[in-house]
Length: 87
Image 1 (cartoon, helix red, strand yellow):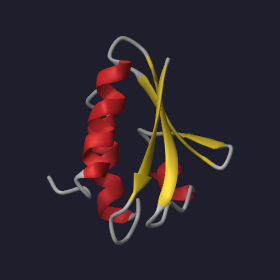
Image 2: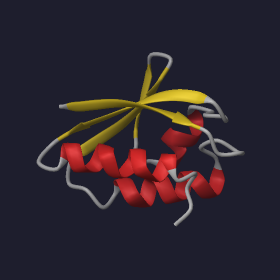
Image 3: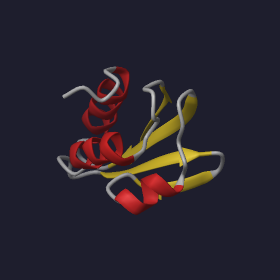
C-alpha cells in the first residue's frame, strides 16, 4: 500500500472536467486506488465517488493505492493534480 497527500489547487477543485481527467488517469493502472478526504474514502476510478467528496480548491486529499503499480499510480495522479489538470 502506498499513500501520499496532495492539495488540489485548480480553480474548480476536483469537479466535472478535472474529475474526468483524474478518473481516466486512475483507470490506466491495475492497482486499486482510493481518494480520501475527511475520513471518507471513495474509489478513485468512480466519477460519482470522486464528485461526492466535494473537493474544492485548497482541499488536502490522500491518494491511496494498493497493487502491482501502486507507487506509479499515486505519483501519476499527484503529477496530474500538481499540473492543475492540464493535459
